Length: 259
Image (cartoon, rainbow, N blue to C red; front, top):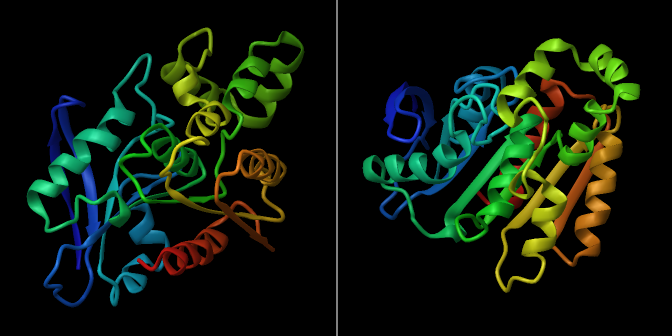
């Protein structure tokens, strides 16, 4: 079943779009839950409209919840809405009050693609007590602080502007301010170091295409996290930053976590 609608968020102080995919068959116990996060150009219906998620979800016992986080980088924005707080606190509270979903972190996954892959890693690493599973497909912004500092470098600014465009630079200003400064809570290497000594941390599965422009960063981040002793499953195969790869990777995430 696919449900499309709106919920009112006290954190966002507005109604916001949401899409939910449920299994085909009823389940006597509480369902597992997976929060699926879209990329920069997506919204709450992207996963259902451009992947085989509705088919993948048929036979499992997991409810998939897809919020709209706009172009926020899943951050409590400097000039905008508190999307990180919404996704990690407000949205789960809303959904648990409506659906028969488990409150156990071991039954809770956060999964995302591109900007949403960054968001999924950020949620799981900043709030490890909330999630037992994290899937990141072709995640961007793995070294966010370095990227923001590069944009503040006049020697590199023109190159970055040509590569990504003014609209993405504007998105970053809205999220992080004119000075493009990210707090430690937005920096994945910093967050990874903080959780490395915990007794209990989420399981991670990540994937990136060999032709993806973020491939090198994904390899570098994988090495960093694994050196910290964090269980971080990484796979790569032929593909770019494109929908066919994302769809295949989503199937692998679901299978890996048994969702």
